[in-house]
Length: 242
Image (tube, rainbow, N blue to C red; front, top):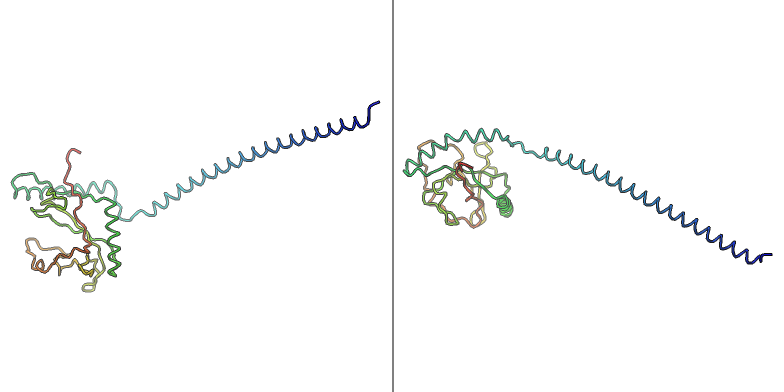
Protein backbone atom coordinates (compact mmCIF):
# COMPACT_ATOMS: atom_id res chain seq x y z
CA UNK A 1 0.00 0.00 0.00
CA UNK A 2 1.28 3.46 -1.03
CA UNK A 3 2.28 5.89 1.58
CA UNK A 4 -0.32 8.71 1.82
CA UNK A 5 2.43 11.25 2.41
CA UNK A 6 4.18 10.09 -0.77
CA UNK A 7 0.96 10.49 -2.79
CA UNK A 8 0.33 13.93 -1.35
CA UNK A 9 3.78 15.07 -2.41
CA UNK A 10 3.24 13.86 -5.98
CA UNK A 11 -0.16 15.50 -6.05
CA UNK A 12 1.27 18.79 -4.78
CA UNK A 13 4.07 18.61 -7.34
CA UNK A 14 1.58 17.89 -10.13
CA UNK A 15 -0.62 20.75 -8.99
CA UNK A 16 2.32 23.15 -8.88
CA UNK A 17 3.52 22.11 -12.33
CA UNK A 18 0.01 22.41 -13.81
CA UNK A 19 -0.49 25.80 -12.25
CA UNK A 20 2.89 27.00 -13.54
CA UNK A 21 2.11 25.80 -17.05
CA UNK A 22 -1.26 27.51 -16.87
CA UNK A 23 0.25 30.81 -15.80
CA UNK A 24 3.03 30.48 -18.37
CA UNK A 25 0.49 29.87 -21.11
CA UNK A 26 -1.59 32.79 -19.85
CA UNK A 27 1.46 35.05 -19.83
CA UNK A 28 2.34 33.98 -23.35
CA UNK A 29 -1.22 34.70 -24.46
CA UNK A 30 -1.14 38.08 -22.71
CA UNK A 31 2.21 38.86 -24.30
CA UNK A 32 0.90 37.90 -27.74
CA UNK A 33 -2.18 40.03 -27.23
CA UNK A 34 -0.04 42.97 -26.10
CA UNK A 35 2.17 42.65 -29.17
CA UNK A 36 -0.86 42.49 -31.47
CA UNK A 37 -2.45 45.46 -29.73
CA UNK A 38 0.80 47.44 -29.96
CA UNK A 39 1.11 46.67 -33.67
CA UNK A 40 -2.50 47.77 -34.18
CA UNK A 41 -1.87 51.02 -32.30
CA UNK A 42 1.25 51.66 -34.42
CA UNK A 43 -0.76 51.12 -37.61
CA UNK A 44 -3.43 53.52 -36.40
CA UNK A 45 -0.82 56.12 -35.45
CA UNK A 46 0.85 55.82 -38.86
CA UNK A 47 -2.51 56.19 -40.58
CA UNK A 48 -3.32 59.28 -38.54
CA UNK A 49 0.12 60.79 -39.19
CA UNK A 50 -0.41 60.32 -42.94
CA UNK A 51 -3.80 62.02 -42.73
CA UNK A 52 -2.29 64.89 -40.73
CA UNK A 53 0.46 65.40 -43.33
CA UNK A 54 -2.13 65.45 -46.10
CA UNK A 55 -4.20 68.01 -44.21
CA UNK A 56 -1.12 70.12 -43.48
CA UNK A 57 -0.22 70.04 -47.17
CA UNK A 58 -3.70 71.15 -48.19
CA UNK A 59 -3.76 73.81 -45.49
CA UNK A 60 -0.33 75.07 -46.57
CA UNK A 61 -1.50 75.37 -50.17
CA UNK A 62 -4.56 77.32 -49.07
CA UNK A 63 -2.46 79.65 -46.93
CA UNK A 64 0.01 80.12 -49.76
CA UNK A 65 -2.81 81.01 -52.11
CA UNK A 66 -4.25 83.44 -49.56
CA UNK A 67 -0.87 85.14 -49.17
CA UNK A 68 -0.46 85.69 -52.92
CA UNK A 69 0.13 89.43 -53.39
CA UNK A 70 -2.36 91.26 -55.57
CA UNK A 71 0.40 92.72 -57.75
CA UNK A 72 1.71 89.37 -59.01
CA UNK A 73 1.79 89.20 -62.82
CA UNK A 74 2.06 86.21 -65.12
CA UNK A 75 5.17 85.05 -66.93
CA UNK A 76 3.56 86.01 -70.25
CA UNK A 77 2.78 89.52 -69.01
CA UNK A 78 6.37 89.90 -67.83
CA UNK A 79 7.55 88.87 -71.29
CA UNK A 80 5.27 91.39 -72.99
CA UNK A 81 6.26 94.42 -70.95
CA UNK A 82 9.96 93.48 -71.03
CA UNK A 83 9.90 93.23 -74.82
CA UNK A 84 7.95 96.49 -75.04
CA UNK A 85 11.01 98.24 -73.62
CA UNK A 86 13.25 97.02 -76.45
CA UNK A 87 12.59 100.06 -78.65
CA UNK A 88 13.33 102.40 -75.75
CA UNK A 89 16.52 100.52 -74.95
CA UNK A 90 17.61 100.67 -78.61
CA UNK A 91 16.97 104.42 -78.63
CA UNK A 92 19.08 104.86 -75.50
CA UNK A 93 21.88 102.84 -77.06
CA UNK A 94 21.69 104.87 -80.26
CA UNK A 95 21.88 108.19 -78.44
CA UNK A 96 24.64 107.21 -76.03
CA UNK A 97 26.73 105.46 -78.66
CA UNK A 98 26.41 108.47 -80.99
CA UNK A 99 28.03 110.56 -78.28
CA UNK A 100 30.78 108.10 -77.49
CA UNK A 101 31.37 106.89 -81.07
CA UNK A 102 32.52 103.47 -79.89
CA UNK A 103 29.21 101.58 -80.20
CA UNK A 104 29.92 99.54 -77.07
CA UNK A 105 27.18 100.90 -74.82
CA UNK A 106 24.35 98.55 -73.82
CA UNK A 107 21.54 99.93 -71.64
CA UNK A 108 20.74 98.42 -68.28
CA UNK A 109 17.80 96.04 -68.44
CA UNK A 110 17.72 94.57 -64.94
CA UNK A 111 19.23 94.95 -61.50
CA UNK A 112 20.15 92.42 -58.87
CA UNK A 113 19.85 92.82 -55.13
CA UNK A 114 20.79 89.99 -52.78
CA UNK A 115 17.80 89.04 -50.66
CA UNK A 116 19.94 89.08 -47.51
CA UNK A 117 21.07 92.62 -48.30
CA UNK A 118 17.49 93.69 -48.95
CA UNK A 119 16.33 92.25 -45.63
CA UNK A 120 19.28 93.92 -43.91
CA UNK A 121 18.35 97.22 -45.56
CA UNK A 122 14.70 96.96 -44.45
CA UNK A 123 15.77 96.16 -40.89
CA UNK A 124 18.14 99.14 -40.96
CA UNK A 125 15.36 101.44 -42.19
CA UNK A 126 12.97 100.18 -39.51
CA UNK A 127 15.48 100.62 -36.69
CA UNK A 128 16.64 104.13 -37.58
CA UNK A 129 13.14 105.31 -38.49
CA UNK A 130 11.79 104.16 -35.14
CA UNK A 131 14.55 106.07 -33.38
CA UNK A 132 13.58 109.15 -35.39
CA UNK A 133 9.90 108.66 -34.56
CA UNK A 134 8.97 108.13 -38.21
CA UNK A 135 6.32 105.73 -39.51
CA UNK A 136 7.56 104.19 -42.75
CA UNK A 137 4.76 103.63 -45.26
CA UNK A 138 6.72 101.93 -48.04
CA UNK A 139 9.60 102.23 -50.46
CA UNK A 140 10.07 104.50 -53.45
CA UNK A 141 12.35 103.51 -56.34
CA UNK A 142 14.01 106.40 -58.15
CA UNK A 143 15.34 106.14 -61.70
CA UNK A 144 18.76 107.70 -62.07
CA UNK A 145 21.88 107.75 -64.24
CA UNK A 146 25.49 107.22 -63.30
CA UNK A 147 27.84 109.93 -64.70
CA UNK A 148 30.66 109.17 -67.12
CA UNK A 149 33.15 109.34 -64.26
CA UNK A 150 31.24 107.03 -61.92
CA UNK A 151 33.30 104.53 -59.93
CA UNK A 152 31.62 102.16 -57.48
CA UNK A 153 32.71 101.55 -53.90
CA UNK A 154 34.56 98.47 -55.16
CA UNK A 155 36.56 100.56 -57.64
CA UNK A 156 34.69 99.40 -60.75
CA UNK A 157 33.60 101.80 -63.49
CA UNK A 158 31.59 99.20 -65.42
CA UNK A 159 28.29 100.97 -64.67
CA UNK A 160 29.41 104.45 -65.73
CA UNK A 161 26.80 106.08 -68.04
CA UNK A 162 24.28 103.34 -67.19
CA UNK A 163 20.80 103.68 -65.78
CA UNK A 164 20.31 102.77 -62.17
CA UNK A 165 17.78 103.07 -59.39
CA UNK A 166 18.10 104.00 -55.76
CA UNK A 167 15.67 103.20 -52.98
CA UNK A 168 14.36 105.36 -50.17
CA UNK A 169 11.70 104.71 -47.53
CA UNK A 170 8.56 106.82 -47.70
CA UNK A 171 6.24 108.65 -45.35
CA UNK A 172 2.89 110.32 -45.93
CA UNK A 173 2.81 114.03 -46.61
CA UNK A 174 -0.14 116.22 -47.50
CA UNK A 175 0.35 118.64 -50.40
CA UNK A 176 -2.57 120.77 -51.62
CA UNK A 177 -5.16 118.38 -50.17
CA UNK A 178 -3.39 115.39 -51.69
CA UNK A 179 -1.70 112.60 -49.72
CA UNK A 180 1.65 111.71 -51.26
CA UNK A 181 4.18 109.06 -50.34
CA UNK A 182 7.42 111.05 -50.18
CA UNK A 183 10.85 109.52 -49.93
CA UNK A 184 12.97 110.47 -46.95
CA UNK A 185 16.32 109.95 -45.35
CA UNK A 186 17.90 111.12 -42.08
CA UNK A 187 20.55 113.79 -41.73
CA UNK A 188 23.57 113.58 -39.46
CA UNK A 189 21.44 114.66 -36.49
CA UNK A 190 19.00 111.81 -37.13
CA UNK A 191 16.28 114.21 -38.34
CA UNK A 192 14.04 113.58 -41.32
CA UNK A 193 15.16 114.99 -44.64
CA UNK A 194 12.65 114.70 -47.49
CA UNK A 195 13.44 113.74 -51.03
CA UNK A 196 11.05 116.39 -52.34
CA UNK A 197 11.17 119.16 -54.94
CA UNK A 198 12.82 121.53 -52.46
CA UNK A 199 15.80 119.20 -52.45
CA UNK A 200 15.77 118.39 -56.16
CA UNK A 201 13.58 115.29 -56.13
CA UNK A 202 10.45 116.20 -58.05
CA UNK A 203 7.88 113.41 -58.21
CA UNK A 204 6.20 115.09 -61.16
CA UNK A 205 7.07 114.74 -64.84
CA UNK A 206 9.72 117.22 -65.95
CA UNK A 207 9.31 119.02 -69.26
CA UNK A 208 11.69 117.70 -71.91
CA UNK A 209 14.64 120.00 -72.46
CA UNK A 210 14.00 121.99 -69.30
CA UNK A 211 17.09 122.61 -67.21
CA UNK A 212 16.53 122.11 -63.51
CA UNK A 213 17.75 124.64 -61.01
CA UNK A 214 20.67 122.86 -59.38
CA UNK A 215 21.49 125.64 -56.95
CA UNK A 216 20.24 123.38 -54.16
CA UNK A 217 23.36 121.26 -54.65
CA UNK A 218 25.40 123.95 -53.01
CA UNK A 219 23.36 123.64 -49.85
CA UNK A 220 23.74 119.90 -49.46
CA UNK A 221 26.24 118.62 -46.93
CA UNK A 222 27.54 115.10 -46.66
CA UNK A 223 24.56 113.89 -44.66
CA UNK A 224 25.39 110.21 -44.90
CA UNK A 225 25.85 109.19 -41.28
CA UNK A 226 22.24 108.01 -41.02
CA UNK A 227 21.39 107.85 -44.72
CA UNK A 228 18.52 105.51 -45.62
CA UNK A 229 19.10 105.64 -49.39
CA UNK A 230 20.23 102.39 -51.01
CA UNK A 231 22.06 102.06 -54.32
CA UNK A 232 24.92 100.19 -56.00
CA UNK A 233 22.77 97.25 -57.01
CA UNK A 234 24.09 94.75 -59.51
CA UNK A 235 23.11 96.38 -62.83
CA UNK A 236 22.78 93.98 -65.73
CA UNK A 237 22.75 94.94 -69.41
CA UNK A 238 21.32 92.47 -71.93
CA UNK A 239 23.27 89.21 -71.87
CA UNK A 240 22.72 88.03 -75.40
CA UNK A 241 23.26 84.37 -76.13
CA UNK A 242 22.30 83.23 -72.65
